[in-house]
Image (cartoon, rainbow, N blue to C red; front, side, top):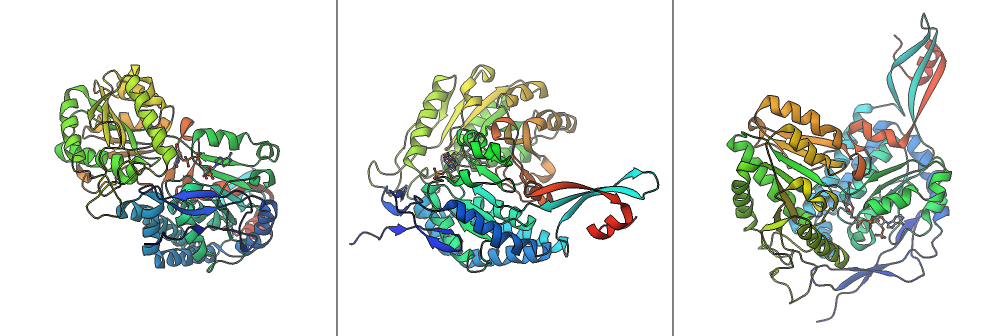
Length: 523
Ligand code: NAP
């Protein structure tokens, strides 16, 4: 049987497909370790690509109303939907995704585009947004000030992580395009196959310069950003810091949004009813195993009242016993490998660090296990692992190190809100905290206590336990981001997601005249 051909992934820049001429990077199938594609960005003129997007894509988008931009997002949604099956297969092959994992990513992209398409429709005929009501500068309303959010005149540079090649592209592009900014998207090289195919179909339905793709290393892209551009990044804290500190980014005052590492927590409150408790067990299982734990929002730390620790260990372990690790293309497998050899090495090292730092194993064994349907020793597999740190505040590594794989740690606590807050705070800022309980006074205190350490708090009680989404599900209408270690970023959140792509400009002057210029209702 002949080997499948190795694809060449090109970049779409300055309105055409281009390939670099230098040493190519290789993309692998993480199940078989076979090479499946190459790409290179060496020698590409990235300054010209940004200028093309500014000159062609920007005016086109700004010429459209929100409804018009929403219609473009809807066209994008439909184009991707038509390609859904092919994209799922690519995600299985290049990302090590099970079909379920692949759908989570691709359907997340579709849902986000759909949400922002609808938002565009509802914002209607306007070209920009006004914030709040006018400020009266001189009594009587003759001299007033408005705050307008005007689309910046630059490009939204999007640099994404390897774990969500579809959703990552779509969630950032949806907000930027609706705000009126053209996008240059750079997926992580290792899993770029899905993003590459998406852009192949998207450029067919979008006007020139609205969406560009850089497929491969970032090269000198950031040397060419200008004062009207923005950079939104998702990935490791180290790379985020490097981008923030980039000389050109600093000197041009380019806004940077960072979504980085996160040690998300789940808290079981004392006295939770059965349905609430069951939701926690279900969600812990999902968060540990979906995408083999490679989600920025996955639950890494699970706080349980000390007197329920054994019960939680038994119930989570029972669920994890049903996990079949192996070739993600098989129907009888429900967890695939990690995406790259580097991710597996990093996860193995991370597990060793957690174990040396006060955690012990209560389910599973460190290592690859015996993946089903896979050649001996091949593939970047890591078995699910449940740990306990008996003295949570002494186990520093559990709060400092994000193991990006199917690994979570149970942290017993005394059931008080104060103790839960102290443990959660050790994560130094995370994307999401989920709280499961039925004592309303306790819940109120807990939501307010842990809120400042998170971009999102998910509360689950008996009344809605069967309808609750697992906390790792990012929702387009709600903020995505987190303080501190999580990068201090904000994405999505309905119209809030557009803030990053717009300039807040205070416009002061003749009140009634300004109201007319800005399309405000005259009070
Ligand atoms: P990474 O190594 O930091 O890479 C992320 C992106 O940055 C890739 O596109 C990478 O390109 C690019 N990059 C690398 N060096 C760069 C540089 N010097 N300048 C500009 N861009 C550069 O992260 P990763 O390994 O892909 O992702 C794993 C991490 O992402 C995890 O820690 C996870 O927590 C975090 N994450 C966070 C979120 C969130 O929403 N907060 C979501 C997903 C993942 P190449 O691939 O070409 O090297």
